[in-house]
Structures are given as C-alpha cells and as structure tokens.
Image (cartoon, rainbow, N blue to C red; front, side, top):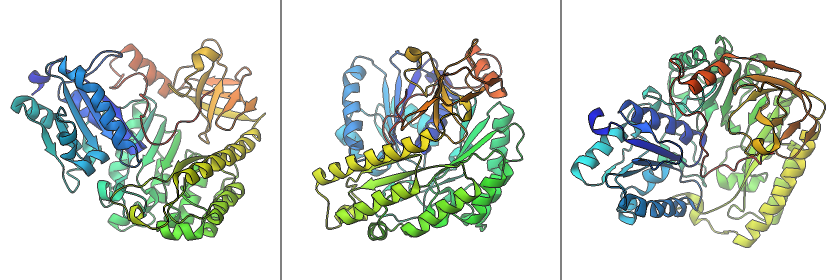
Length: 490
C-alpha cells in the first residue's frame, strides 16, 4: 500500500474537543505510517480528513458547508479523496455520503485505525466506503501517532463515558467507558518525557472515574502520584473530571504531587438544583461549591475554570439567577459558556419547556459579562506576582504585531510577555512578572527575570531543524474549528 500512496499528501481538519485533537494526532500517525505526507502550508492536499464533533447544533451545517466548498476543488483534482470521521460520522453514518456523495470514506469513533485501508479500498474500487463499528476496535493509544507539539502532549487514559447527562450525545457515540491499564499509561508518559515532553494532559470523558473498569476506584489519584515520579516531567494536567466522582484522595494527590499543576477544570453546567436534576448531573450546587472549597484549602492558588450551559429546557429566570449567584461565589478564573441547543437523540431534545432562543441569547450575554468581570477580578489579583511560563507556539495570534511571545503559567492562565534577546524557544520556561491583566489573559511587559532552556525547547529546535531526534509532526498546532471557544489573545 505504501507504493500506492507514495507522495500523496494529507490535511486533517479537527472539530471539537481535546479528545478529537488527540485522535487527529493518531490519524496523522496512521497516514504517515502508510506512506502519506503532510501537505505543505497553502498547498492543496490529496486527502482531506474531517475529524468531526456532534456536540454543537450547527456542527452538521458547518461540516456540509465545508464539504460543499471542497466539491469544485475535488472536481479539479482527479484522485483527491475526502474522509469524514469522528462523532458526527458515528451519528450520521451513510447519511453523509447521501448528502455529500463526493465523500470517499466515512469512519466512526471506534475504528480510526481503519482509515488508511478504507482510503485505499475507496481508491481501488472507486466507491465510497462507510465503516462504523459499535464498539471499540482497539484502544487508540496503541496506534501510531504524529504529535502536534514537541514539548506538550495529550495522553488518553480512558475513552467513552458511563454518565447519562440528558443534554449530551457523546456516550452514544463514544460508547461505554473503557480504561487503559495504569502501566500502559505510565509507559507512554515515560516515553514522552524521554523524548523531551515537559507537559502532559491526561484525557478522558470523565477522568476521575478512571479505574472503575478494573476495580480500583482510587486509581486516578494513584496515577497522578505516579506521574510525579517520572523523570523530566514538569507539568501534569487533566481534563475533564465530573463533580460526582471528585474525591478527597484526588485533591490530596494534586496538592502533594509537585508536577501536578494548581489548576482544575470542573464542569458545572448549571447553578440551579432544579436544572441539575433535569440534566441528570448527580450532584447539586452545595456539593459543587464544597469541592471548590476543599480544593482551595489544599491549593490556595489553584485556578478553577468551568463549563456552563444557558437555556436548558425548563430553565426559569430564578434558575438562571442561581447560576449567576454561583459564578460570583465560585470566583472562576474562566468559563466556557454555551447556549443550549437541541441535539437529536438526547433526552433533553424532547423535554417540555424549551426556552425561546431570544431568551437564551439574552441570558447568555448576561452570563458572559459576569464571567468576564469575575475572571478579570481574579486575574488582577496576580498583577505584581511572578509567573513561570511554558513558551508555546500558537497561543498569541497577535504576537508578531505586539512583539510579544505567549505561553501558559503553571495555573494554565494565558500569559503574553515581552521576550528577552535572544528570544526563548517554544518549550523553554520564562519567569516574569505580571504587569496587567484582562479577563482572558495576563500581560508581562517588563524584562523577564529568568529564562531556563529545557529539553522541551531542545526537542522543538530539533524538530524545526529536521534532525534525527525531531520526531514527527508539524512545527505549529492547527486551530480547532469547532467546540470550545478560544481565549482572546492580546
């Protein structure tokens, strides 16, 4: 098959969440292993792969719009192929080729490893290939990978979800939770650290239920502590936990493990007990706030972020007011806020009391304004303090115009800073002082206090130079097209 695909180029367009971003790294690794090569910037690829999301209401329209834009391109390029995978493919299946018959391959969330074979079969047979499995073919982490970053990596610890939130379609598309064995996870992390990766993010639909599949409900806390023993690993993060399963042993592991960062993304969804019950979230506002109190007692400087949905069916003005009150009390460092939209196939889609769109939009604006006020107040408290920034590619879209560089502090806040001469490499660590703040980022416009060259920076430089130790993947991470909104850069 390598001969057939020699010199054929590919591009992957990723929609949605971090799990999709990680799956796209696996898809890239599979294609490179099969003899394909990444398309150069600005070049028309021979293969375009859409890794889709089904969470947002307009995901379908955006996908078919993008597919429509590619039709004349494909007509002008004999042999070009288009593949659609991910959650929307798992949901819509052959509907995709019915609506867009110029698509060559449709594959689901459970069989991403089949992509190269499906492309080849479609090429040989000159017929669209649709293959959707109902259960996981093999854990994605055993597949080849082409990582986007030389210094930061996603590590999946589980796939699927056992929760039954009434607004969420993910469990029906990703399946029941399946956990990797801790030894396999740690082996991957050690290999990454040996290659120069400084920062990992543990991924799962519900990371702190990790271990249920193999009978150890304390497994996630143990895994965090084990990460603290990995040589060269400086930063450990995870996403996303569920308040129902968030236990004190995990809080202790976070506080007592030096490389677990003082940051927590804890989805709230609503501050109303009535709405939480309708959502089947299995916790109430008092329990949620108690978790935040215990986290802050153990880690006073922890930055806590969240997800909130506005306009869930039946949400009254009082319910919405409860959410606003909780945001004020919780002092979130940031929040991803969403207007509820009907997702066919979810219980909430047929619930009575659907909130009029104009009411949802008005509440959303009020919530977004409050979140900005709260996060700005939290960020202003950091003016004058020192922060350690992991320099990163692609975090500041205006860096060239502002003559700054960007990266993440230990608490995951975005920091735009004035670099010294010579400029640090992505993957290096800069210690600097916060000079001002906005709701979405910190500015550090004074001279840095220190620059520490790291193995992550060396790995980035080797990749740029195309050296033997550079590994696979591009120099800069591509944007994610749908899903969580990006922070505003300086």
